[in-house]
Image (cartoon, rainbow, N blue to C red; front, top):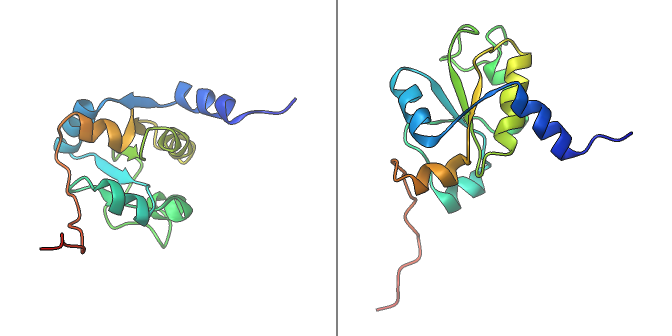
Length: 135
């Protein structure tokens, strides 16, 4: 029997905490790391959350493993609360489950991702367009 991506997602979400945008903002105020896993181009199109740490998916495990020589300076132990954010809250669920496997028992994801954060009216930094309207 083959496993589908929906099966993987359901299994991942059964093992993690899912926080709504306001719960995520509260977690950040108490010191949680908000990890933005969206690729550069997507962050340019959609915008960014001020204070979020950008860790693209292909290097995430190395950056968030406290014993890795390639870890982020802010990552010193498995007790740090981490909330993962993608665009809509799907890939972030899979990544949060991976962090649980790495020993972060309180790993969470942002339910609805960046889209939900922005819709909730929480702070977003938009990049200014290089193109100007013709005069």
